[in-house]
Each structure stands twice: as structure tokens, then as C-alpha cells.
Image (cartoon, rainbow, N blue to C red; front, side, top):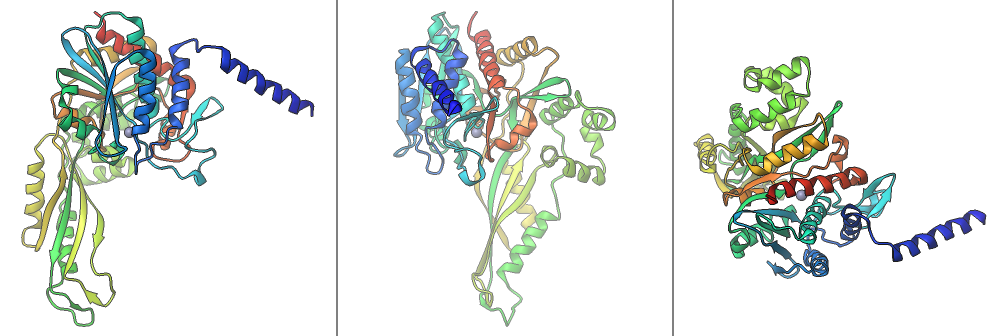
Amino acid sequence: MKIRLATMTAILLSIVSIGITHAETIEDEALQWLTEFIGVDTVNPPGNESRAVAFYGGLLDREGIPWDSAESSPGRGNIWARLEGGDEPALILIQHTDVVPADADYWDSDPMKATERDGYLYGRGVLDMKGTGISQFATFVALKRSARSLNRDVVFVATADEEAGGAYGAGWLVKHRPEIFQGAGYLLNEGGSGTPVGDTTVFSVEVTQKVPVWFRLTAIGVPGHGSMPRAENAVNTLMDGIAAIRNNPFPIRVIAPMDAYFKGLARSMEGEQKARYMNMAGALRDVAAQRKLQEESASHHALTRDTCTVTRLSASNKINTVPPVAWAEMDCRMLPDRPSADLVADINALLEGTGVSAEVLMAFTPAVSATNTVLFDAIRRITSERHPGSYVIPGVTTGFTDSHFFRDLGITSYGFDPLVMPSEDEAGFHGNNERLNIGAWKRGVSDTRAIVEMVVYD
Ligand SMILES: [Zn+2]
């Protein structure tokens, strides 16, 4: 009974204090925004990102910042706002507001409600990427409140649909609202962060990605009864085509941005591993070493060559029927140093004579963002000042984010949030019990602001 009374008193006191106190710092305020934002259901599919537009619109109204929005389709809202500054190329802070589904059965708390526990905030999207989004937003608000003149425009953009490829979000805006991106030189998006390695921190700024080129492979044959096989069989033809691709893996090519990344990682390695990462091209000359790397790190291995993975297969729906058509879908990821048409030509050459045809379902344009820029310098300066002993490496990823849309426009785009996160927390991306260390995140909010201020103030 005593305990219950004490608990009730504590609850009452906390209710009172929420009512009367104002958040002391922008980081505290940001945490309140993030807590609220996690509860805004933007699970994609279906998305419902117009709820995020209402959320941000309300906050922007309170700050007296004009904003605009557009739906690419009912419920698929996108929002943007601009702080006007001088003539330097504009800086865009971009985020996607959708999140992937979460199965509450596998979580320790409701994924659609921000829950604080042991210094962590749990909820779907705290990492991918509502946490980064609010961090960017806090910077945007701080710039407005300070009323200091900016040397360039700063644009806040929150888009729909990244988790399903961005056709209703970033891709749609680029096509239908190109004015948002006009005059932009730099863009900050998701993709890189800080990782503690030994007693130091490595900050990875994502500058390029493997380029997806997705295919459908089709074989056509003579249908019939499974008991009377003919020489012509769509399933066999398809398997021959797939075998031709599988048996001829693309050669190892350690291109410059990947080499820079491996060398950056090598700084925190030791001995034989360090030597290998310092000279990845040399180390991978023999096949056994290639296989070893693939076992150690499938993602690092994937950064050393073009890859093709067959992920979908379809043939007959009946065991005793030879189908007229068999097809497969294949997820190829190309190193970003040649046009996707070259990879398509390679695939067609491999399939020649097999009877399998390849249709391109989707292909992006390769692009790498340069690192000799004011934004990269600011990231380096602020992280080294605030995280002594840390260093920055230009990162690369095997997956893709919305950044490719903007690299295609010639905008230098970095995937970066200065949040320092132990690599075990990465399991939360699209996983169960997605969580964010609150202290580290607040520090990241403050670091993001310092980086942006260094770029936008003279
Ligand atoms: Zn994301």
C-alpha cells in the first residue's frame, strides 16, 4: 500500500511537471518530438505518410516557418520548408517518414509507441529513420530561432515511401516538384553513422552505393505432361540460363571509393587483417581469399564485384504438368563505375544460346559524391573536436537509399547522422526491439546542429 501511494504520488508529480515545465534544451525538446513521432503510424505498406505531414506541419506552424506539401497519391504525403539565405548552393536535410512493419509479438514493448527503458528509447523507426529525421528537424528549428543570417538556403524535406523504393516520395518530388531541389549543392540523408571500434570511434559518411539492376529472366518451352518429357522444356532452359550466370561470377574489381573505404576500416584493424584491408585488390588475387572474405563479411565481399542473386522462381503450378513458361527474378547490384547498360550487355552475353531472355525491371544510374567539400570538412572538423581520437571514412553500402535520386541531379549527397551506435544496435534496423541510446542520440542532435552551422554561417 505504501509503495502504491508512493508510486501514485510520483505519477502525479510527473504529470504536474509535464504541465508546467518547458524543455530546457533543443535536445530535450527533440526527444519529446521523437517520442510523439514514433506514435504516428506511417508503416509502409500502406504508408499513410500524410500523418507525418500533419505532425511536422503542426510543429512548423508553431515555429512560424512556412511550409508546403503534396500527396503523390491519397495518403502519401510529402512536406518541405525552406529557410532563405545567401547565394551559396543550398543545403537539403532530407528524411523519409515511412517505416517498415513491426510484429508486436516479437517485441518487448509496443513498437508503435515510444517506450523508454534503461536509457534507451524503443519503437519502430527510432533508428530508421525518425531519430535522424527529428535530429535534422531540431537543427532546422534551431537555425530559424537563432535568426542569424545564413550563407545559403537550408531546405527541410520529409518524404514518403523510401522503404518501398521512393516512387511516391523522393522519386515523385524530383519529377513533380523539381523547384525544391533547384540550386541545391549538398544533401544530408540516412546511411552512415559513428561506430565505436576499440577505444576510438569511426564515423562513416556514405558517399556511394551499389547500383541495383533488377531482371526478369524468362524461358518459353513446349507444355505437356510430366510423364512424357520432351527435349524442349521451359524449366530446364531457365535452369541452364541461371547456371550460365552462376558459373560465371563477375570478376573482382576494387574500385577507388571501395578501396578508400577498406583502407579507412583498416585503420582500426591489426595484423594480417589490416594488411588485407590495406590492399584489398592484392589480397583477393586468389579464389580462396575471395571465399574467406565472403564468409567473414558478405557485405564487404559484395563491395568488390558486381553480384547477381536469383531471388524469385516460378514454373508450373502442378507437379505433373510441364509449364509453357518459367521465369526467375534476379537482383543484380553493380559497382558504381559504369553505366547499367554495360551490366545488361554482360548478362545478355552470358545468356546467349541458352534460350533465356532477360528483361530489365529497374536500373539506377551510378554516382559517387566527392569528399572535398565544405560539408565533408565540417563533418570531419566537428566529429574530431567533439569525439577526440575519432576519424571519418567515406563509406559505401551494398543497399540503396533515396540518395541516388539526388546524386543523379548532381547534388553532393552524404548518408550521415553523427549518432554513435554500437554495431550490435544495428540489428534494430527493420528488426525487433529497434532501439536508440537516448544519451548518444542527444549528443548526435547537438553534433548535427554544429556540423550544419559550420556550413551555413560565414
Ligand atoms: Zn531508412
